[in-house]
Length: 293
Image 1 (tube, rainbow, N blue to C red):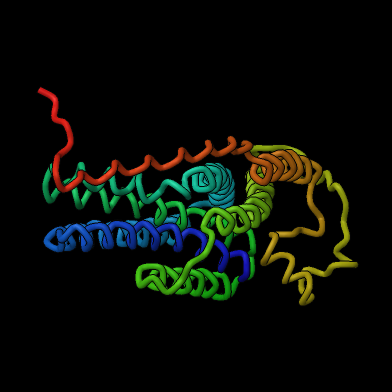
Image 2 (spheres, rainbow, N blue to C red):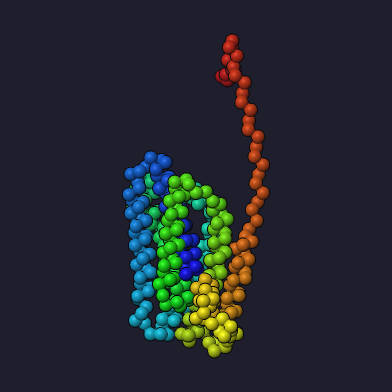
C-alpha cells in the first residue's frame, strides 16, 4: 500500500502543481475567461487516464495466461522506463517548471481556446497516463489480491490535491527540488521491484528462460503470508525466491540509476551579483541636467 501511496502522491503532486501554476497565472494576469478551456483540458486528461487504467485492468482478462504474462511483463518494463525518465526530468526542471508552463500558456493564449485545452490536456495527461500504467504494473507486482493498493493510490492522489490547494493558497512552502529528489529516489527503489516482477512475467510467458533457476529461497525465513513479508512485498515488491535473471536485472537497474539520480550533475557556482548602480544626483534648483542634442 505504501508504494502505491507514494506513486499517487508523487504523480498527483506533479499534476496538482501544473494545475496550480496554470490557474494562478491566468488569475494574476486577469484572464479568468481562459479558465474554462483549461479546466476542460484537465477533465479530458483525467477521463482518458481513467479509461486507460480500466482498459489495462479489464481488457486483459480474456487473454490466455501466457499472453497476460507477456503483456504484463512488457508493460511493466515500459512503465519503469517512463517513471525513470519522469523522475530525472522532474529533478532537472523542478526549479524552472513555472517559467516553462508560463511560456507555453502565453503561446496558447495567443492561439485561442483550442490551444488552451490542448496545453492543459498535455500538461496533465502525461502524468495521468504514466500514473495509470505504473500503478497497474505495481499492483500486479504486489499481487495482494485486495483493494489496499488502489486505496493507497487514491489516498496519495487525495493528499496531492490537498497539498496542491495549499500551494495555490500560499499556505505551504517547501523545497520542491529536495522533495522530488527524496520521493524520486524512493520511486526508483519501487520501480526496481516492478522491473524484476516484469522479468518474472516474461519468464512465466516463456519469452525468457531461467524460470527454475533460483538465486536464493528464503521463503521459510520471510514467509510471503507473514505481516513483514506482506509489508516488504507491498512496499518494495520483494520476492523471497527470485530467479537469477530477476536478481541480476534488479541490481543492474537499481544501483546505477539510484547513484546517478542521487548524485546528479553538479550545479555550477552562482555568478556574483553585480552591484546595484548608484542613483544619479538630483538636479539642483537652479539648473537641470545637461541634455544631449
